[in-house]
Image 1 (cartoon, rainbow, N blue to C red):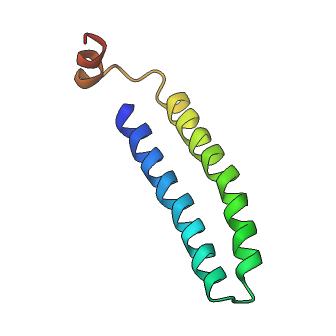
Image 2: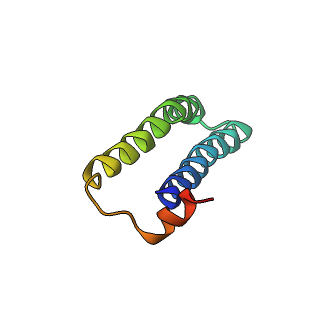
Length: 78
């Protein structure tokens, strides 16, 4: 499960940072789409973490009866 959380966190960081980078670049070039991209960035800052949380919660719910794998058992022993 830790691998799934780590992958989701990395994807979320990449998505959020790329949205801000795109809106920053468009603001430097003073395009007419800059305000809309900035609002999309703010929207994504809220929605992407919520979507990642829902994905992880759904994954846990679907796999709640799966037997524990050997890597999860070894992590608990540490």
